[in-house]
Image (cartoon, rainbow, N blue to C red; front, side, top):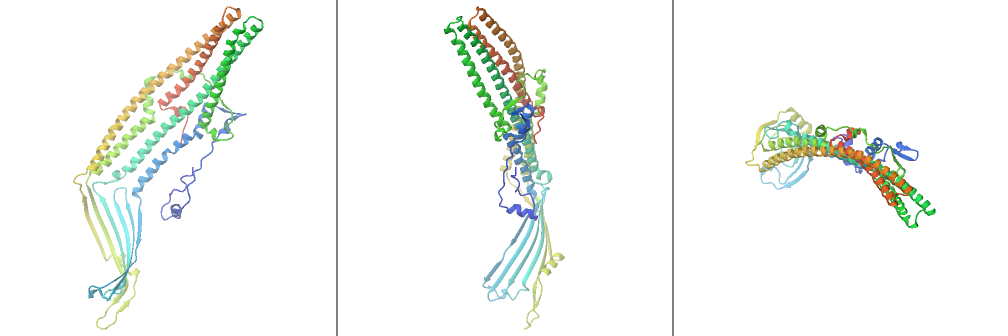
Length: 532
């Protein structure tokens, strides 16, 4: 991404400051192409183990890339909080020419004409302790046709430093850094939220992987059932040719074979659909060359050894409580609530501040000296250096110290903010408890579902063994003439159903194991995924 290439990161008066401030170039957003897809191409196929598949998901998945940007705004909020202590420079120049009628002989002219050109420059900043200061320099040029002026033109210069130090409200670094601490705390909460989103996205991606494996195995079962139906149809066709079977009795076998072919076609379309979903997960749909490469998944439906291990329910619950990022996010909200309460308490305090300023003045210009009588005026040359010399000589100065108190008779807004902060903390405390209860229930349900599916696999395999024996017995009885065609057809159906049950229950074990890792918050660690 190049979106931040033109963000202002330089400070005045660096040359880059002006380039970044006045640049009219629009930021460009450049999206990267999918990576590492060719690394897993073997022959004409894209062969993916679960580990390699998840590596491609992390590198190329668009939803994950979107989540990677979710921390940008909270990080910018931290920078924004530092902005409260940024210095500000101000400069102002005016030029005013005026012609006015006199109202007194003291004005020294029949028509008073003046020119005033003041210039002020100042720097203002608030420090993290709450102290605010202003350092300023001012100068002015005043020209008049008045005969009573001592200096014409008159040049003045002054330098001033003013400060204000809060003594109650906004006093100290802790109070003034509360906004910064809240921004940092919210960043931590956003990191926990981001981790939760990553876990959900990786879980969805892995489930998509096992959906394809399931569809592949269901296609294998459908092809096997088609072959079995075809073999039985061929047997009946031979019997028909030998006259041992009535032409009316072959329709059942043909109908069964046609149904099996339909099952194969539907299984193929289902597999193709899920493979397209898988390509989206790894970004292969964005690559014109990779989007049509056949995908071969190397994982099998066999129940992993990790699913056979006995599970300590309370240990799983405790692990989830210690690991779940959504619970950590809720706990982080309590920290934000404490900081907000401190802000509200600060707003309720009276505003008492110690103020002070110091000013040094200087004057210069063309001095008009009158000797008296009919002696003409004598002009003594002078200018800005004289005014600056007097200003830095500190001979004409003034200083002031004082106290400023702002005491609201009643501060309903601050009181309401304080009440809201207390309510939010109570709500967040209850949210933590609610999340803890939900975590316990979800973990226990996940463990139960895993144990149930694990047991279902064992029972499904036993049912498959009996279905295979039953089909073998039905075929032998039919060959001996003691069985019915309907018995063979029913036996075939039961075997297909039993094989499908073994596949679906085996895949469900995998998915329930994923769900348990999600509920305990350990999916990323278990898969060795580190997202930066």
